[in-house]
Length: 350
Ligand code: SF4
Ligand code: SF4
Image 1 (spheres, rainbow, N blue to C red):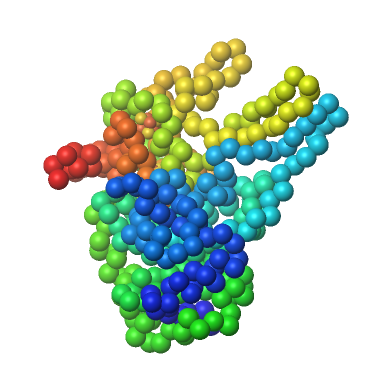
Image 2 (image 1 turned 180 degrees about the vertical axis):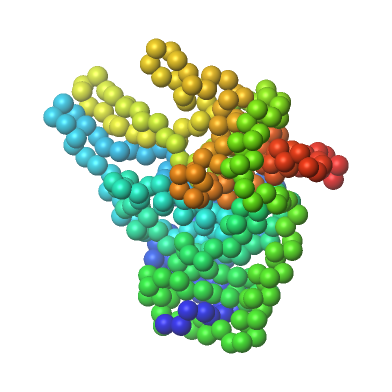
């Protein structure tokens, strides 16, 4: 099968129906004036193609907020979850595709997380191009475009989508159809023009090429105390982040000896997250925890795996009730060489 096609927008419903033969299609749907969430869809008109960021990223499909690991009784483990429901994630933008690649890296590294790996096998990912708003800074993080991490990718070129079919799984699903046409030269040019012109649209950006060194040099910058003192330790920033993956393990035990072991998302911003035996807490206050989170996103993972764990989606910026997760603004302040208003201050002026 060819790899590059065009799909007339008038044929999108046919494309959607074909996707649904793989499994239930989940796509961004408008849930309020300003917010979107992934929901199951059957019809094109249900999809919010304009959605830039859903409240929760697609990590919720790969790694659910809460899931059973196994059930037990007095004899030991009696059942483990069966993961065999196929699913299509439609409409993931490059930042979220990059985020899922980080999760793949974490959860498939030996010995591998069997639940994650099984769930991943049953998911088909359809990426979708986007244009940045003032919160997006994926371009600064190098995640404004991706070459892999999806099965199909759609680029919006006016009344068509340019369709890249990237995996054998997708090629098989989309074979023998009457809606995909091999991409001719004018469409290929329109595709190249889209990605070239899009670069210039990013306004929320920093130039720093060596974030780890900057974070090291500015470990004692007063900005951490100023922001940390405003942090509410609510954990929003970690739950909405496409790459935050910390979890807690809980046993839901019954008096009859039966029970279920579950894992649920946890947050390094919670007071007890770094608490250990003897009532010692490595990061007892919000200043330490906020600095730790920034370092993990912009520094720590880079050292260990040569990957930043911030993909520049802007979710933490829009979700922080204390308005302190303006990551670009913080980096610019740490650089100290130029002035930039807080992105929240800009909001008030608009
Ligand atoms: S740290 Fe913030 S901007 Fe970066 S990936 Fe996470 S939620 Fe998105
Ligand atoms: S969302 Fe904001 S207030 Fe809440 S824990 Fe994160 S930085 Fe603190």
